[in-house]
Image 1: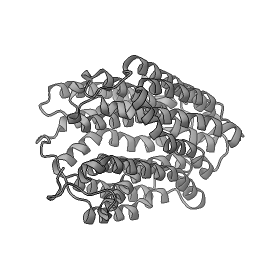
Image 2: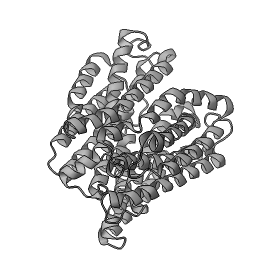
Image 3: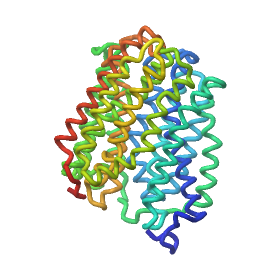
Image 4: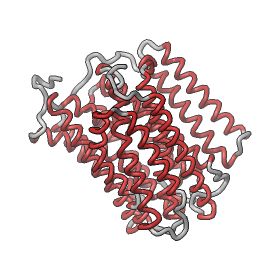
Length: 471
């Protein structure tokens, strides 16, 4: 794509490094924040007197607005300018982070987290789109690979940083630290990131689709989160679930009829694309439960500090950094079906093992081995899964394929945090009380293992042995 009369910035130039700096730091803000909040949940619960539902909404408030609006964020960037929307998202995210850092109650914190998610929905799709539009065609793959690798390092440091801040300072700093970083990203973007648009982007925004999708996800999330305390027959739960079901049904019907749909349903005619997203939903639902509950369980039940709980899952990120690219190359040689079948089964075995982490668990013998197995399973799975979701459609639909797969993953994690504690039997108990959490955690890990096994079955049924684009 030509930008200002050139063919794009080159990878090994100062201009290319500035673009990478802005996109890596910007996308890392949203990713790191999601991981460190999990670490801080027990401390937040004690400080603000939050119930189990309040802690769930601290995660879900962010995830809900992000999942509901991420496709819209990509569309806005295509239409109004990717740098502009990315920068607005960074500023919005920083302002919401400041509100999180000064929140005096769990209700205010949840509201600020919802605002954070809106900022995340604006900046997250913009980072990858900026790389695709800014770099010369021959350098795009290297730039995206560098962005992924550097972002992975940021993700690896996130739990360590979050745990350290919670232990030695205050949980509020995990939000306040975003503000100076956001100022840096905005300054670099304004000076060094070229603007780009999609001249073929639809002139009309699918506002009705956004509203219906948000209502569907929000209703389901509220209904399942309120269920343990209010009971399945209570009016708030029934109303929430009804709004959720009607909203999702209305979303599908509207997207089928809309002239400019946010989600063109014709893309699901591809068996491989549909299968990849079904696998994504089950796998990321399991992941959402794992990363939500393991860090909390290690602190509340096993007695770990926030720092120790934060770094306990670090080997997963390290293994993915080391082996994901190799797994992608393997899938390119032998096809995606085998790694997408084996990876979830390995993860399922690891989750069964993790379910045994309880009081007095020793890290080297009780925690680290299943964490390593889980990391190896994800390393085998994630790259082929992403490649299948993106490669199942032709190049003209690459953007929507990426957006849909990202939205599916986010929605799965959102619903998992709402549903897993309910399905695991938390009832009216507390996620910060060891007696309540221990049995809930154990059951939730076994449910997660079942979800992973289901993903493996779907891979066998839907994912082709060899992938041909657009089919």
